[in-house]
Length: 459
Image (tube, rainbow, N blue to C red; front, side):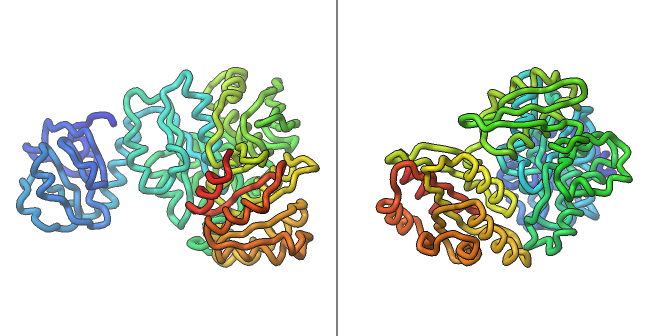
């Protein structure tokens, strides 16, 4: 964080500082009580209790609040910054802080591919730029303030995932980051437990354009049916597309599977970019194309960018291939499970499996589908049969819903199994697996039973 003067912060929030509030440096701005130290400005969001006794041990701690709190009389009067509307004051501060820095800020959104695209772009840039970015897949809204405060005088570019799990998420994220470049990877059913209509979910994602004030650069997946039909008539900036469509700005001409990654050929203007990206699956070529489009917008030499991608280290549990015991291949794809990511994972599994390998899918629940759950489990079950999955193992009550449509689509009912915990799965695999099997694990949300079983089956 850039050290600030309290009086400048207060002025930005339309508050006139008093004499005792002038000349004081603020080195931490937070809404997390555990982060309060000397020279801290604490926004009391959610009306949680203020740790007054702890604060008294520090120097120059100030609390922004719109309601009184217990023992506030034990603090000095100048430490209490009482406002009419805490949320309004908070976002006046985020706007003030963000606009202290004239740097490009990239916001990455979409149903799948956000984290990987962000990590690819970060890898391209960090050799020559000081990059502030989302950590791994930690993109929940409570990370936004710490990510914003991670920008300082040394930051050259920032890259943030702007996730959507409920209405208002996109608008709020943009009030932290004010992105200048927006990337939309692809759209499919997800988070329709809280956003009950898929159309509303798509509309929420599309609010990234409003969050950019309809200016800057928008990067879209030209092959995605929802994004290709998105209403961009109000967007006044530059639109760049990527995909296999012949009209895409970054056109994916072809790709090949190669050991643990993908060789690709992308056409952009007069150039043909030929490169390699670690990580299997067509979707990773799309992620690479999106990251290259963003890199070009940031003025990066594309031949150097392609070269950097070849040294990218793929994220764990994102179709991560590992060697199991007794010549069994394990695929850990357990970072998340929604219809799109499961479909991409199963298609990649089917693509890389050799004819003599039994394809075994071990599936937990798909998360956050709401009213679309029955339809999406039906589609996924049919896909299991259509792709020739040999064995289906489901874990957990909800995941049972994969079985019936899978059997109807051609999976042998004798090769469909269901378990409730890791011990049951481990005992089953001890007697069931044979050399050359390939076992694919996929589940939604954290499930330690999957982690435990994968660890047990490793070589």
